[in-house]
Length: 445
Ligand SMILES: [Fe+2]
Image 1 (cartoon, rainbow, N blue to C red):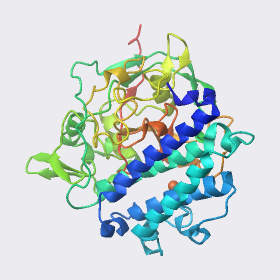
Image 2 (spheres, helix red, strand yellow; image 1 turned 90 degrees about the horizontal axis):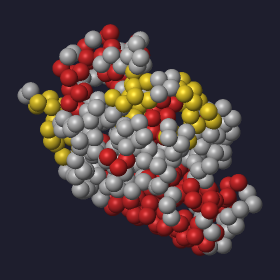
Image 3 (cartoon, rainbow, N blue to C red; image 1 turned 90 degrees about the vertical axis):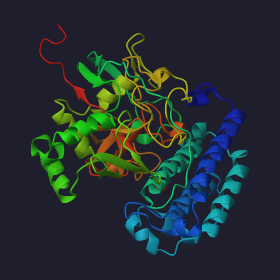
């Protein structure tokens, strides 16, 4: 199958086997993330920002039970007594370690029991007649939910102390001789989607957006470029920071990206238990929105808006249509993008020439989430589905949109239309950024 959009064209039996394969593949990753550490580590809270890993694991099973076993399958509840414990809206992450959670062995038994029931019902539930099951949407939603928790669990691994517990191959090399910026001509393009069967409510519907001429960095901002901002005193100069950003920088005493520390006159970083010199060619990661915006101001640029980002990533001027991904409509393959926790770090800037967008920008998908200048808001014509708590309750100025996914994001959860959101002060996310700018008067004449 070339692309997940072809789900719309898959026969029902192929759709069922696609769902089963995605569920199984995703569970393998969840197992790696939870089997890599001992029971004591699984129940421990490594940061007040995160749940204990054992909470994420049972929560994955709980959502799968609610949506697939009970709702789609119409089967009786397996563990109605634990619904409340694993409802993310009932307990903050900081409070979760105090709850009477399932222990590691119980949690593994529970998710296994749920999964066995789901595999039984994949073969018999109708995949039509109700929007929740059209093109197996509910299964796609649950697959992506587990993948999102796999990325959250990977962030917990990054926050935990102790020796390395995960291993991966290094990413492919970068490219030195790229132009610093690409030009994206102004005009309308189609943003969002009405066609992707597994797209979530906040990506819908497709709609026309006009974007003016702009320049975009060819690659995400590198550690080396970010170090120049640090060395130029960027963290000590309120000129580059918004009021909220400066207040945060003062309060949190920020001096560098999270997980960096100065050793004599060189910067080291801690990455999944490895302490290593900061690699200058790699995209910077673990910076907040405020740091990204301050860097951009210092560089004489700005962060791209969300629509600029998506136009650069998807718009094909030759056909006038928006692609599913920068490289075309095919699902991501390893040569396109650094996704799926195949590598436990971003690839150096300029990597993945096969994943370049029509405008020439690289690494828009994978490597690091990219902060945009835009608040998380609904598209015109938005309607909440299948529940308000998926997106709608988060809309507003409290959250900034991040785009493109990271090395920790699964390919299935990383369409060109996919929207992530977080607080502008968050740094544990695998987030970096690239800059944009408006052409100077006369620059394009
Ligand atoms: Fe969740």
